[in-house]
Amino acid sequence: MRNRIRIEDVAQIAGVSTATVSRALSQPERVRQDTRELVQRAVEKLGYVPDAAGRALASGCTRTVGCVIPTLDHAIFARSTHALQIALARAGYQLLVASHNYDPVQELALVQALQQRGVDALVLVGAEHHKQLWKSLTEWRNPVLLTWACDPRLPSVGFDNHAIGALATQHLLDLGHRCIGMISGYTEHNDRAKSRVAGLRDTLAKAGLTLASDQLSEQALNISGGRLGLTALRKAKNPPTAIVCGNDLLATGALLEAQRQGLNVPNDLSICGIDNHELAAEVNPGLTTVNLPTQDLGRIAATQILASLTGEPIAQQSLLPFELLVRGTTSALQNSRA
Image 1: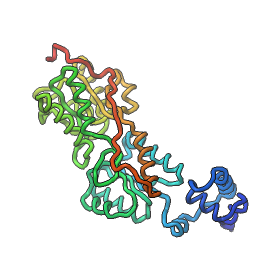
Image 2: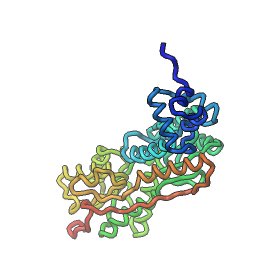
Image 3: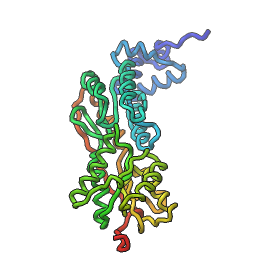
Image 4: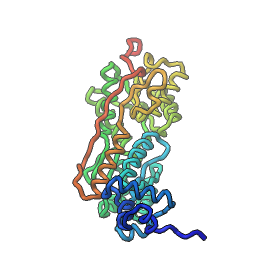
């Protein structure tokens, strides 16, 4: 039977003390880079696996961060979560990821499970959560960070989703459109979708316009949902001449379905998305969209979490910038459609 590799073996190979090895593995930021490299080479040579439970018991921390997101099926969450993971890993933390499929009860259960596992901090998406979860989060002593939206009850890094919906809508108004519809994600348990719809409604209201019930279609946030939404809006009493979509997958589906139905985009119908998904620049015509710096969100979230774990002060609310990218799916209202 192979003898278990001990921390003393690593220390001997690296030529340092066992305390230095322990510190290099549990608190790498406190160890010089050349020493960390010596320890890492010894760990790799020996195949040493640290006793995580023992380290956690001794230090009072697990060097893990829990992250609960709505879905693993959307590239926007994948990009921000990946950036978060990379930044945390560089600081010696592991990211534990779970998804709740927009179910607040499941989210509550997942957060409680992560807390029971002893994660040092939590990262959540949005500001709409189960009442019991809010109570649990505000009473928990460890850092909690909200992302993608901001809420005064907890530190947050996100976007002004109302303003995002307003920006897309104002772009279409400026092009002369007065009959504007929206294909949104399901707004139940999704504060980001709700805020974007509200941004559209409020911007239309300022222009003396309204969003009729049959000019709003809530769909799954994917290409198929965009196709279904476009078909539904085309059946409205007053079919929109322009459509804002809750994300770029919906917008791509709407574009493909419009083209399948024989519509010319943008001459017959203008379409604007949100996110700047990689598909946006690849479809023909290129998709006009609101660019959201999702990777920046992940990196900034990691910085905030790491600062909180070391007791450093952080901004309570961090709103990230966004911008309109005008491509080929939006154009001025044609006289024939006025």
